[in-house]
Amino acid sequence: MQVSLEVLDVRIDVELPTSVDPRVKDQVEWAWQHCLARSGGLAARRVAWRGHDSATGMHLLSQDVTRAAIDARAGQAVMLHAAAIANPDSGAALAVVGASGAGKTTWVQANGGNRRYISDEAVLITSDLQIFGIPKPLSLGHYGIKEQVAPVEFGLSEANGTEYLAGLWILDRDDAATTLLEDVEILDALPLLAQQASYLNALAQPLHQLAAVVSGSGGLRRARYREASDLSELVAESLA
Image (cartoon, rainbow, N blue to C red; front, side, top):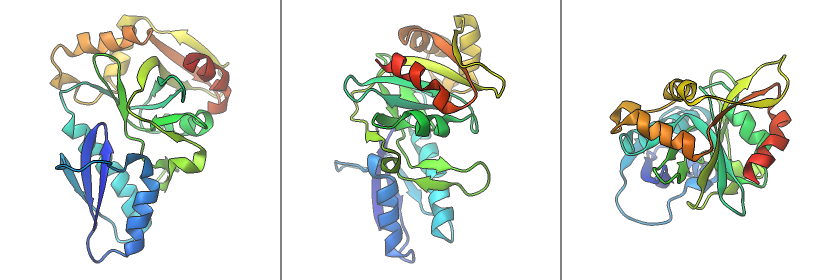
């Protein structure tokens, strides 16, 4: 059995062993419905199903597909550990950068309803500011095996490949913080983003390319907040 996905503009085939319950294929297709490949052709990567139960398998699949897609695009464009959503009418996208556990998925849950879902984990940004993501199931939970929930269950609509980067934030959650956005100077922004980039050194003139993304999107801004929902008005303004 096989499920063909397309993430970061890369075709990836997921191989399911014959021993797996056929209902698992339906589960994968439901959870990954925003990523199902719509055209034929050869896959750039293949990923094998792992895990002895569906929960573990789905958790590992999320990791394996993400890693395979990032590896396939190494050296081709700027890739950041970021979540992103877009205005459903204009395609203007806001990407929020953060390490694993920084709150990217929670931010998507709180602010992505009725908007285009690009990713809760990683994005690729081209030189002309097109943005591609991994609109995988949302990974819920803080430790251990995370539940993989289909984007549609949070009212997230599908990206169509026309999205462009219009804003770039770095998340800074603080229980004592007042919600605000702060501009980050370019000399401070570059090392912050470099820490959350994949295969940056594989790019030609990596800091020049990263700086172009920052300046093209209007500059990096630091989002200080307590709860992700506190950012809703600022998100709306950024995507207007």
